[in-house]
Length: 320
Ligand SMILES: NC(=O)C1=CN([C@@H]2O[C@H](COP(=O)(O)OP(=O)(O)OC[C@H]3O[C@@H](n4cnc5c(N)ncnc54)[C@H](O)[C@@H]3O)[C@@H](O)[C@H]2O)C=CC1
Ligand SMILES: O=C(CO)COP(=O)(O)O
Image (cartoon, rainbow, N blue to C red):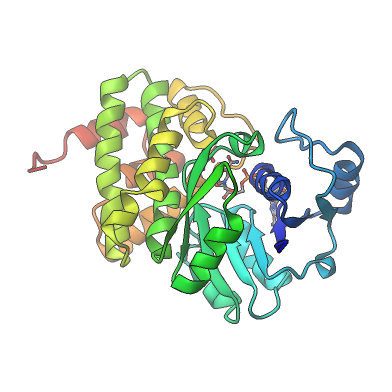
């Protein structure tokens, strides 16, 4: 049976997922924010953020939320826009809302499934996350992601509906762990970029990733996540990809700061807001998150990268 799926957000990730699912035979509608963007996409079938990629002709494109109504809705918009989006464009009860964004909402401290539970209580909340660049998914390259949903039965249905021949989904019933892994790895990727940009070396990056991963686990476990979720695709896997690739916006943003040059404008760099949110949570709840807190301080211009590095190295010696 053909599966109907709506994808909200025609940026890099939403378009890539819509392309992959449409190619796989699903009946996909891609929603974009403005009618101008819809007109351009319909005419050229090209996505500005995915150069060289053509939208399949079967894929419908609309800016009219009234034209949506599939039982599965992917939300591929920036994290800080999600709360407002859920309130302005509600889905009907029973819809499975699958968050495809990575971050922590600054004003509430909630992750995407927390916002869905708060703002769309009649819907099923799930998150799709893990190591994947939109361009790789759009090109049909092999990719593995985590589909996390607290409702095991609903999660299994989503896993099956959203997997394709090249997009392999593992399921989890730990959305808290999955979404925190995806959010926190962006902060660690910014830090890794700073290390490389500032010329501190590959050894320093390896140390930072290892200790950064400890912080990811510490915060996530405090929030009730399971350790194995952090060790999986959505945590460790995505940290490795994002903190080591020049294709990552978070890594390249940090690398530019480290090198003392201006980061490119207009890119969606989720780790910036997440760093602030994490620093706030860590301070409020007394959780030791030195790397994330330093990233936040550097982004707020209250510390230089040199000062942050010196402060991390000067911490008390401890058992690993
Ligand atoms: N690009 C990638 O490789 C991947 C991205 N993601 C995640 O997907 C999410 C979206 O990122 P991208 O698609 O890459 O960003 P993007 O910048 O390419 O696209 C963002 C889309 O959201 C729309 N948007 C912005 N503000 C909005 C608002 N207030 N209401 C509704 N729509 C709004 C924009 O018009 C645009 O279509 C992020 O959380 C990112 O971490 C996850 C995995 C891979
Ligand atoms: O989330 C991603 C890879 O899994 C994309 O990373 P960036 O947002 O840093 O480009």
